[in-house]
Image 1 (tube, rainbow, N blue to C red):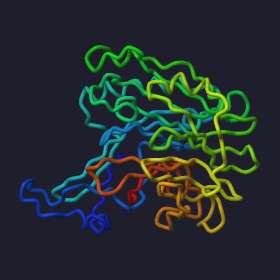
Image 2 (image 1 turned 120 degrees about the vertical axis):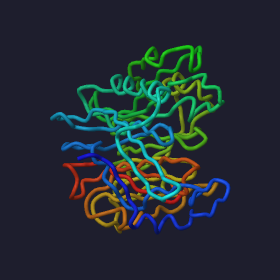
Image 3 (image 1 turned 135 degrees about the horizontal axis):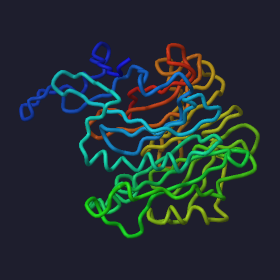
Length: 352
């Protein structure tokens, strides 16, 4: 089945707010809007379990890294797929497929992401990838000095329980877009991040917007809760070496995000945190929740409601998007009926 989603019925309702009579551009819409209808990612999925994704910030062409059992595996390994989305500012139609049209520069910049997958995978389970681009997410100096260089956190149970690891292809002497082939930037062997790990399961790390705090999930106190580690000041160019040697880092359970049930998979974009929980009051199984940063702490978690959650499990939400869209894109996994098999990846537009 070819993955091409053209959503016009229902989507038009959520596009009304962004329609304008723009005499300068000639378009009906100033900005795009991600459809607020949950949509299966189609050909990205397999008949096996596909979940736990990450997307480095790329705009309309997204390299998706996620955990999968495809190929008949008994364990989860990372795989890499690409999706491309677009919004027609004249017709108001949104489309997405897995055949990105990006030019050579995009292909070159994204090429090392496959090397990250190869470096991280083992004969154990690899879960909860979290990948950042040095140029686009961490340094953002506008000069592309660290072109095609990435930092990735993930969890693996290769030593028994789930521990958090990092890998990267940071180059100490940056050369920019024209000075070094992206294929000459291999990733290092995964390195444990000791201060985040315990004798229990620790997984799903994510930075806050200032890169001063790492949030993650752990069952070190029994059930899975959301924890945070408050970091000392580290430059973005020090993360790949600094995190693995830190000691005495304050770590605390985030009471406002945790419950007596299992609270997992935190992910932060700007002032919004999303996660999954099987706490009471949901629609069945694991549901997706969000919380907003108010300057002093996180607001009371809110269930995304029945338009997103079902009686099945909704798992590992992530957020992405650009200023050219009125809302942001949430990608998550679910084992709801109607998918290809097991857990599939889905997308939906949610408010910023």
